Image 1 (cartoon, rainbow, N blue to C red):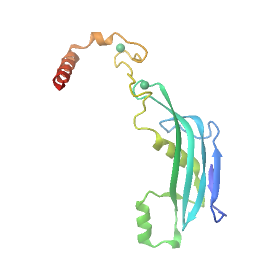
Image 2 (image 1 turned 30 degrees about the vertical axis):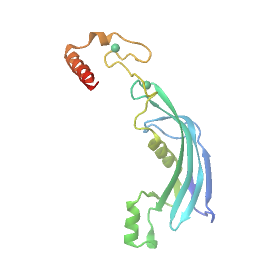
Image 3 (image 1 turned 135 degrees about the horizontal axis):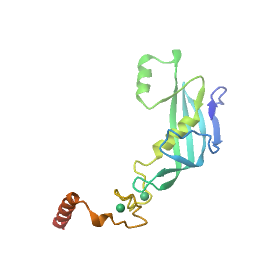
Image 4 (image 1 turned 90 degrees about the horizontal axis):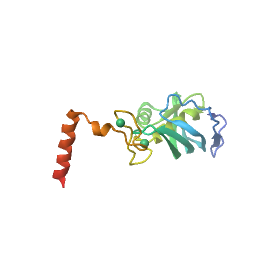
Length: 178
Ligand SMILES: [Zn+2]
Ligand SMILES: [Zn+2]
């Protein structure tokens, strides 16, 4: 969804959009959409910039880092973003403009702001750096790929002798810690 800033009312432009399944292209994202996002908020002019405030609600999913099972993550993300015009024209002096560029300003062109891009970016940022189905997830066996949450495979009993040295060492260190 693209919002047009032409004829913006003085108290801002209210927007609300409930995405349909498949409306957003998430092929480049590290998550999938379980529930398409609902985005709502208000766009306001601040000088020549535009301030976008509101929130995005959605349910996303991503594979667990350890066991690869799908993890469902409901999110509600408040945003407060500034957009600067791509070509500010005569309105800005150089120095002022440079200082603004240092800040995290997005850019808009032709009085249009692409909400799709913004929504996907917000969701991407919200995705935890480590996705776990649960804190104590035991993951997959590195040797046979069995889901260790569901079954105990036999690999542990046939541990590679080279690793056995390491694990004895580790056990010894843990002993010493006590
Ligand atoms: Zn897991
Ligand atoms: Zn195994």
